[in-house]
Length: 334
Ligand code: NAD
Image (tube, rainbow, N blue to C red; front, side, top):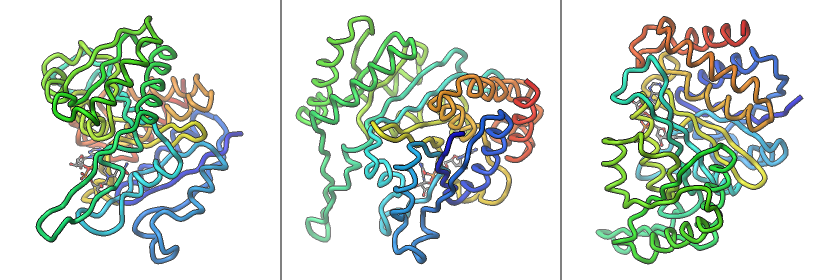
C-alpha cells in the first residue's frame, strides 16, 4: 500500500484531482490518499495559503500529487506552487512533451523533456521597489543549484535512454548569471561522454523549437526559461490540457500538470483531464508501479486516438468526467 498526499488545489483543480483518483484506482494499485488543503481558500482558517500540515504530510509520505493553485497577480500572497517547491527543496522540474496521435498539431514525432531548475533565478522572490517608479528583481544563480540540476538532467538522460541534452541560456547578455549556469552544465557534461551535449541561446531555442522540434531531446533550463519553454513545448503537442509534470527533490516528489487553475472553467466539467492523469502515470512510475503507469499512458493514447470521449480543446464534446471515465474503463479492461 502506498501513501500519497493529495492537494486538490483550486479553480479546476478539485474536479481534476477527483477524476485522476478514479483513473488511478482503476489500475488496482493500492493507494491511501491523504488529502490536505492549500491555496487562497485556506488563508482564513490557517493564516497562510500553505499550512505547515501540508508540508508535514508530504515530508512524511514523500510523494504528493496536486491540482493547480491560483496565484494573485501583482499583489497578494506569493505563489504557493513556488513556495512548496522551495520549502521541500524540489529542485528539479521535469515536464515531458510528446506527440499523442489524434491530437491536431503541426508536428508528428515530438518527444521532448524540459528539465527546469526550480529553486532560484528570478523566482527566488528577491524583489523590491527602489522608489515608487522603479522596481527590481534579482536573478540569482548559484554554482550549487546549477551543478545539481545539470547532474539531475544527465542522470535522467542515462536512466531514460535519452541521447542529447541542450542547455538553454542567455549567457551572451547575462554573462555572470547565465554564464555560471552554462559553465556548470558544461562541467557536468564532461562526466557523461555517452550523452551528447550542446547549448542554445533562449531566443534562438524558441525559434528552433517552433521550426524543428524533432532535433531536440532533453532541454536543461534555468527556472524562468524552463517555465516559458515548457508551455511552448506543451503547445507543440496539443496544449496545456495534455502536458504533465513532476517536481523532484532528494527526499520528496510532487506531481502536477503544467497548466494552471483555469478559473473560468472551474466547476464546469470542461477542462481536459489528460495532464493530471499523465502526471499520475509519472507518479506511479516513481512509486515503482511501472505496469500501472504504462497502462494509464496507453489508455490515454487510445482514448485520444479514438477521439470519441475527448474534451473541447481536442475538438471533442466530452466533459472532464466523461473523458476520465473512458480512460479508467480502458485501464480496467486492459
Ligand atoms: P492556465 O493554465 O490556468 O490557463 C491557460 C489557458 O489554458 C486557458 O485558456 C485555459 O482555459 C487553458 N487550460 C488550462 N488547463 C487546461 C486543461 N486542463 N484543459 C484545457 N484547457 C486548459 O493559466 P493562467 O490562466 O495563466 O493561470 C491561471 C491561474 O493558475 C493563475 O493564478 C496562475 O498563477 C495559476 N497557475 C498555477 C500553476 C500551478 O498550480 N502549478 C501553474 C500555472 C499557473
